[in-house]
Length: 214
Image (tube, rainbow, N blue to C red; front, side):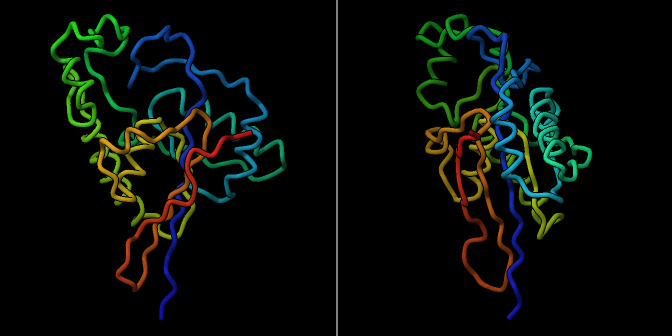
């Protein structure tokens, strides 16, 4: 019997954002706080050497990845290779709502669009944006492709809360509405294992989720 091929996905949510002042930021390129050295050191100890590293196009994921890489280097281990930038793992787009406060978008009942969104946040689409259901489709499709292309490897992804929830939903078959109940904290670690082998069982395992860095 052939040995199953296991591809381990190490998902890290970026460092805490700064300067948003209660605004919806979604896919906006906002700054983040990378001063928590202890958390970056803890994450550096947990991620494996020799992994493929993926970030999104937004600077908060790339700054977070570099901060972890600095602690890997400080420990005398091989530094991560150049990051692969993957747009499919971006945060949910909130379209016209990005850059506006919740009160400005009418989150408390003033706006029909916002009212529908808060009633059914997984399937409703912000004006000019995308639904969370679409994020699950986007992330899941790319996750399936990359799991085939990098079968048997470790893959570290520094991404966003919404994208990590979407990855978990795709892997274990959660309905998007239920996946929105998952807590994914900044600088937390979630691991998904893709198992390809001769059996007919489910291909994914959730190894750990929302593991705090310190």
